[in-house]
Amino acid sequence: MRGRPAHFSMALATSSDLGARQTTVRRVLDALNLDALIVTAPSNIRYLSNHAGSAGILVVTRDAMHLLIDFRYEEAMRQLQASPLTCPTLKTWTVGGSYGEGLLDCL
Image 1 (cartoon, one colour):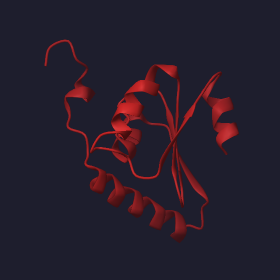
Image 2: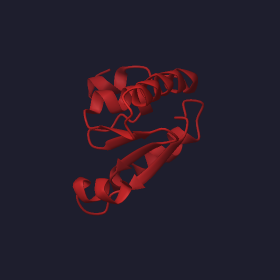
Image 3: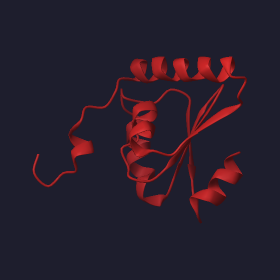
Image 4: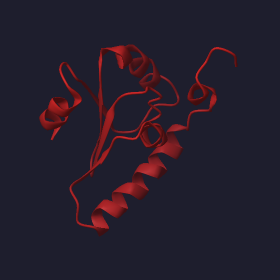
C-alpha cells in the first residue's frame, strides 16, 4: 500500500503461532540454563510479539513476554492485545526515560 512502511503490510501472526514461537524460545532458554532473552531487533520483536513499532525491547522469560515501549505505542498495543492477534503472556512496560533505564527496571 502506498504511504505505509513495508513492515505494516505484512500480516501479523496468530496468537497460537506466537505461542508456539515463544515455546520454542523458552525451550532454548531452559536448554542453555538462561533466565531471560533480551530482544532488540524490531523484526525479531515483531516475530515474537506482533509489536510492529520501530522502537522497543522484548524480554522473554520462562513465564512472560515483557515488552518495553514508549508512549507512542501504548494505544496500539492495547488494541492489539484486545484482538484475536493477542500476544500470549505479554506484559507491557511503558518507558518514561531511556530504554536502557526501562530495561534495568524490568530486569
